[in-house]
Image (cartoon, rainbow, N blue to C red):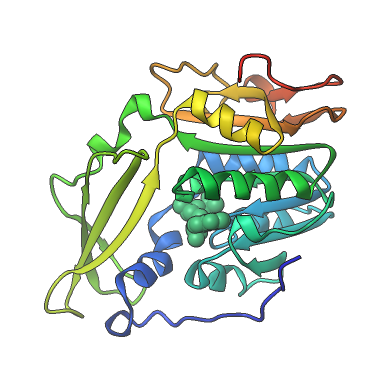
Length: 287
Ligand SMILES: C[S@@+](CC[C@H](N)C(=O)[O-])C[C@H]1O[C@@H](n2cnc3c(N)ncnc32)[C@H](O)[C@@H]1O
């Protein structure tokens, strides 16, 4: 498996940072715990050995440990500025690497990829390599649960800011950010630029990234190429059915071909998601 690294601590010192590092260090500051995080946390709490792919700052695994999760927790992420924040906690084994470098073999009952981290996989080759590595990491009966935005909902058209978003940074300084999003290129990748302004800089500091939008039928082909089949699909984190034309998210539960499924349950009450399988899950509607 990839080497577990020692902690990478990057100080929050805006004048010394590039835009992408600043963006990463502000991630938890600007993103509150939400329904999707709770969805994944419920899954983690119900599983014994969990791999969080693209774990970012490690929020979900840290909450899991705080909530009494007693099994194995591993988080993997290639961004030192994101993973460095996770590494401030010993709530999990933290590995600095992209998903495609995950080399575990049948060690996890559950792999998750939350917060649209899947959209950071920008082409088919990296996506299939990453999915193949995730599949290999799963035990018999294991599940891979992840979300990615549905291109049909065209979320990028809402991302360009009409006005700056103003907030107070971790040092108490007024800061603002404006976003500019383009249209998807031929691969479905949307470029997103964020411009941060504060007294630290004479000019706005830009953070850029690409986010790929993958249509559900193509997603199924990529999963199949990696030996994974769709077992269940939802359009919301409360378990609403996926509608290809209108759902904002594609939330997928995938399982290795031909492996016997175990019961996986998330949440409680009306929002509970439950999938159960004891059959081969090879899809019949993909080439
Ligand atoms: C939007 S953040 C989501 C973080 C976390 N999963 C959450 O829900 O808060 C996307 C994460 O995906 C990570 N990422 C980017 N490329 C990746 C790759 N090839 N493999 C795994 N993770 C990747 C980024 O470093 C980032 O931490």
